Amino acid sequence: RGANEEGVEEEEEKEEEEQCKKFLSFQQLDMASIERGDVAVAMTGDTFDLLLLILLQDDLDSLPARILLSRAVVYARMSPLQKQKLIEFLKVQENLMVGFCGDGANDCGALKAAHVGLSLSPAEASAAAPFTSSCPSIRGMVTLVREGRAALACSVSCFKFMAMYSLIQSISVLWLYQTNSTLSDAQFLWIDMFLILPFTVSMPRTRARATLLPILVKTHLASLQVLLSMLGQCVLCVTFQVLASDMLRHSPSFTCRAGCASVTEDVSSCYQQGAACCLLQPLGCPDRPIRSDTKENILSEETSVTFLLSLFQYLAAALVFNLSNKLRMPLYSNITLMLNFLVALLSSLLILFALDPSSSSLSWISRNLDSLPLPDSSLVSEILFLALLYLGSVVCYESFVERAYNRESSSRLARVSCFFSVLSCLTLILAVDLVLVVIVIGEI
Image (tube, rainbow, N blue to C red; front, top):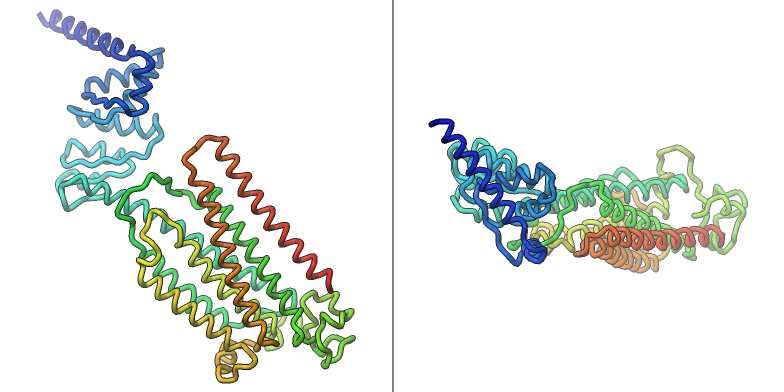
């Protein structure tokens, strides 16, 4: 009798498998409609096991089985092991980011297997899930996904800002090394303590958006989009540093130092005289010790101009990396960040006007920052114009990179064309930068 029952069960399983294969022998139009989402598919745990078995056998019926397994919208009457197999199938076979929420002990395996597991009960499931919701509702999964995507976007923005801050400071110092000058300790302290630190505290306080949007989240800090964004902004930073130094050198009040043997102290400007020593020093004729850290290496017009422009470049970096992010709330919703922007902008403008040679009432600021006043008052407006132009350039470039990589088409051809379009834009900026450097050196 037992053998007869086993034979009946085997026959029933074979009949179910044959019925499942007949069900999979749809017309191509039906499979296409299921793949497009025009037809909703629901399956039980036994059907899932049969489809998974067909898929693993890798026969001619595996493609319809894969479509049904991946496009189903309802999975019901499943055992704990079947739930875990479903999560692993979606993760490994379909290469999807999978979230799972459960409220009982039979969900522990699936909660562990999912990328994001949310427990809706403080019982056994909470020990297996990395997240626990105090409200027994699947609405908590929506909140978890919103906050997680916003946290990823915030991490990438903070990383790009801190990396760009280091690059701007390194570019400024390396550019000043050409004239045997450098930033003072007070200037370094002002940048690090009073300009950058408040931004690092207030930038992560931007909340997530209330709605979910079909936008890909950058999960790799070394992705091509992040690297192209940083590279383009570095090129723009160097370009505007060259422009600021060129404006200083063309200023009528910018004189050579006494250490230049072929030029006296009362010459009108190094650019107008075209002295021989200026050929060796593209930015002027400084009388400064080499490889020293004295007042002669710090108190210079070149240091003042580079320091002033870099202040606005830090502000532009903090603004551009928080401006266009569709996963978080708008910039103005972060009151702390907006107050930091306002205070940093006002303080940078105050330092800019304090280094104006005609403003004697603010001379105490230049003394405390170990900064030499600018040689001409017209440089104040020119530096401010350069700062606004730099802000517009980095905003346009960052928007171009974001739009190029947020296209709906994810084909390889679209990605390749996007890469070459961004690369051509970078090449154009770099070519303009090289032309400016050649002009600056060639005019001398």
